[in-house]
Image (cartoon, rainbow, N blue to C red; front, top):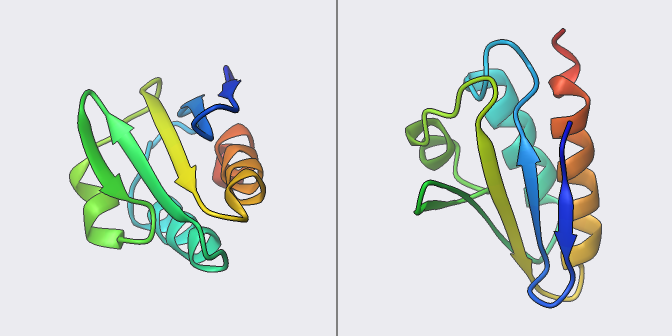
Amino acid sequence: MSSSQNSADNSRKVKIVNRLGIHARPASLLVKTAGRYDADVSIEKNGSRVSAKSMMGLLTLEASHGTELLLTACGSDAEQVLDELEALFASGFDED
């Protein structure tokens, strides 16, 4: 997994490592994880940005294996939510 952190705007780049990409199960895990935090969290692919708390939004990204995404968070717990989301991506959502 490739990742980098930009602390100025609380963003991280992640790469999808699980074979099936972001389908219903990983999207559900992302929404559940992001929902535990107060921070406003978004995920961006090729200029298309959606809320990490929106199942439908995440599925519209059509993010497949190998896709690079930008995670951005704003709020008092932004770093914590980014840490947890980054770990989900790194683990391949425990699918492979």
